[in-house]
Amino acid sequence: MTRQKIVLAYSGGLDTSILVRILSDDYGYDVIACHADVGEAKDKEYLAMRARKAGAIACEVVDAQDEFARDFCFPALQANALYQGVYPLSAALSRPLIARHLVAAARKHGATAVAHGATGKGNDQVRFDLAVKGLAPDLKIVAPQRERNISRDAALEYAKQHGIEVPATKKSPFSIDENLWGRSIEGGVLEDPDTEPPEEAFAWTKASKEAPDAPAYLTIGFEQGLPVSLDGKKVPPAQLITQVGKVAGDNGVGRIDLMEDRVVGIKSRETYECPASVALIAAHQDLERFTTLRQSLQTKAFLDQKYTELVYDGFWYSPLRHAIDAFNTEHAKTITGQVTLRFHKGSMRVVRRSSENGVYNHGLATYGTGDKFDHRAAEGFITLLGLSLHEFSRLHGGEEAP
Image (tube, rainbow, N blue to C red):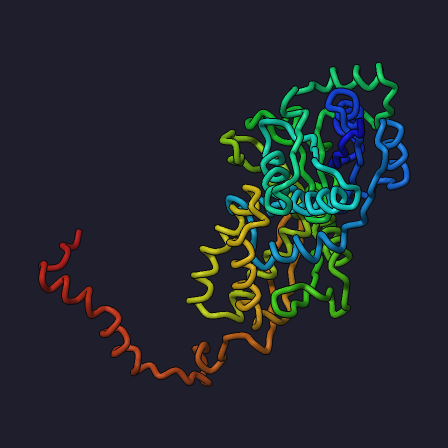
C-alpha cells in the first residue's frame, strides 16, 4: 500500500528532528522536510543531511530572506505593526511565509497533509493552522507536539533511542527564535515577570553601558512608504534591514520586555530584540506624519491596530488584511523622503526629516517676521468650531468653575 506524503515545517532543532521519525513511524507518512530561511543563518546542506538521516524522503530548503523582507516585513512596516504598541511581530510574520512554502512543497510532491512542531499553548499553532487553511483548505494539518506534549527530556531520549542526530549546541536555558525582523527569547528566568533579563539572553543589542560614547546617526530614505536607501545609498530590502539592525543594536536600541496577551488567552512575559524593526517603524511613522493629512492618519491608526491584531492572531491570508494593504499602498503614495535617526546609549529619536511632499509651510508655521498666517481668520474659525458647545452651555447654564 502506497503511503501518503506529508510536508513538515523543519527548523532542524530537536523537536522537528524527532517529528520526522514520529510522522513516519507512528503516523505512517512519507515525510518531506521543508525549511524556509528567513534569516537564521543556518547551514542549509547540514540541515538537509540531518533531515534525511532522521528519515525524510526529501528536504526542501528555501532561501526566503528577500521574500520575507519584501512581502512580509515591509507591508507590516507600512502598517506600523506593533502588537500592544510594542512588539513588531517578528515571529508572527515568519509563520505565514513558512506556511506558503509548506503548501508549495505539498503541491510539488503530491502530499495530502502538512505538519508543524508547535505546542498547544503557544501562538504558532494558530498561525500555522490558519495560514494553511487560508492557502490550501484541502490539506490536512498534523501537529504531533500539540497532541502528545513531548517534553525536552523525552525528545532527547527518543532521539538517542532512534539514532537521530540533533544539533550539538551549547546548552542554554533560553528558547530562541530569530529572523531578519527580530529575535524572540523565552524560558528560564525570563518566565518570572519580576526578574530582570540577564545580559546573556541578548545577542543583537549591546547593554547601554557597553554602547559607544558618541551618538550614531542614520538617514533612511523612503519611496512611497518603503525604505530604499541608507545614508543616500540604495540598499536591497533584506540587506537594509540587516544594516539598520546592526547600527541600532550596537547602540543598545531594540530591547523589548512585554507582558503579552497570547492568542490562546495566556498572559506571557516575552523578551525580544528587534533593533531594525523598531528603528524602521519609528522612521516610517515620522515621515508618515510629515507627508499625510490628519484625517488619513486618524483612520490609519485604527487600521494599523486592526492589521497588527490580524497578523498576530494568524489571519495573514485573509480578505481584511489584503484590503488594509490596499489602503496602505494608496496612503503611502506621498510618503517619500528622508528621516535621520540618532542612536545613543540605548536611546533613539528622530532628529531630522525632509520631503518634497511634506505638508509643512514655514510661512504658516513660523512665529517670526515671515509669518503669513491670517490671525484674524482664527476668531471666526473658533466661533464656528465651538458653536454647538456654546449653544449647549447657554441652554444648560454652563459649568461652574471650581
